[in-house]
Amino acid sequence: MLALISGIAHAAEDADTQGGNVYMAGAEVRVDRAINRDLVAAAGRIDVIEPIAGDAVFGAGALDVRAPNGEGLRAAGGVITLASRVHGDLLLVGGHVTLSPTSEVRGAGWIAGSRVTINGRALSGLKLYGREIVIAGEIHGPLELSGHRIELLSTARIHGDIEYSSGEDIKIDPAARITGQITRATNTIDISNPIADIPILKALRPLLLTGLLVAGLLLYSLFPRFTEHASTLIREAPVRTLGIGTALFFSVPPVAVLLVITIIGIPVAIALGAFHALALLAAYLVSCFFVGDVLARLIGQKPRSKGWRMVLLAIGLFVLTFLTTLPYVGPFLILLACIAGLGAILLQAFSRYSTAAASEAMPSAPFW
Image (cartoon, rainbow, N blue to C red):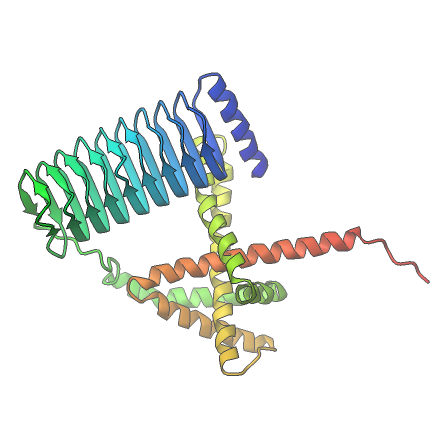
């Protein structure tokens, strides 16, 4: 996979020299020279500090765009910050999406995220979707809002109509200026807990727990020592496991998207996606082992036998499942469990590989 990505990166440099489209990928991508055509990039973090003449498509854990974009901008990521001008249409989907005061969108804008903050200018209207929407900038044209909490601050300047859909009344600072009409849609949306009332999910929950328990038993049966050591790493090196897990969690999906875009890399992308899904499942189960081990230590017990490990797996699984049902906190705990387990698995894998390589490099002992 690394060889393929390296080849794509070199191909991107050649394409840029010859005036073709540019494709970039890696753990971190920094656009520090002007791009004359379209740009497609996928990485854990992307920084854009030089202008892009054509369309831009990004997938990243963290995206920071500080240079103008000549045409459209489409991006998906965890944290997205736009601090420049976009001449074409804008499409952003992320966890936290922010348009800074120096941003300007001249085409149509469509933004969705858990938290959406607008501090810049939009000249052709905006459509915003999110749990929390805060507007402090200037918007020309119609403004459509759908969210749980919507707020217009004192610096907001809206030159057009506002149509919003929310379970709560919109909050508008008296100093905010609105030239159009404010309309509340009849089909109000409350996304505070959007899947809590789906009956089929409640019916499938016991089946899901059973499946996770069986998968955990299979994982421990096949790799007992590896599983134990990986769960121990979460306790002994929490910062390293979270750091490595975060980098891996947000880097693999953009790489898969980039492989799909190259067409010839679609089989590799499918295999990479399947492997990533299995890795996330194993990571969650390792975190369940960790939770069970912590609870055992709190009551003064030290797991020794295989049967005791299975009991701790079941306890950790049920405790973690209960915690993930908590509103607002639940999705974050699921993400945290997957990231921590993923980092622990990778650290343990590298540890075993380093140990094996060191043992092979040692000279064999003489018979005497």
